[in-house]
Image (cartoon, rainbow, N blue to C red; front, side, top):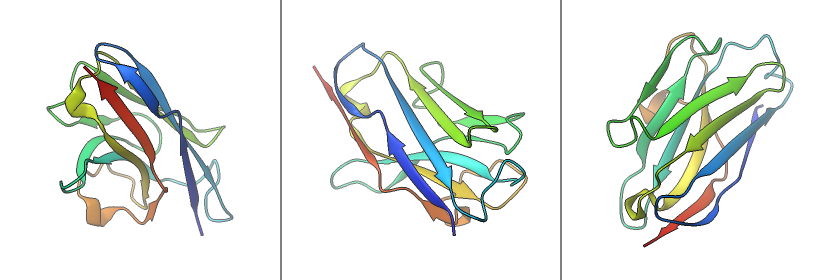
Length: 127
């Protein structure tokens, strides 16, 4: 079993920044586990959408077009933590942000490939 816990969400003015963190734990998740880690978001009344993903070794990343140039995903393998640095935030970035883990060596962007999910953290960007 893998447990994922997001943190770092909150209220921020448009143009501001936030850094989200996702801490992983569980007997099947260790520094040797080769999980692809991803961030997704879901706004009220909308479907969950892909935001960013990073390979198990941090060697490859992929971003949704809507966040390219503004968001940066990274991970600390030793700390079993993945981060999402969010800059130049816009009101349309407002959503619940979810951390997820996929049991694959590749970078995936499809929701169904992810096996484990956190409970989410709210990000609200005011204008």
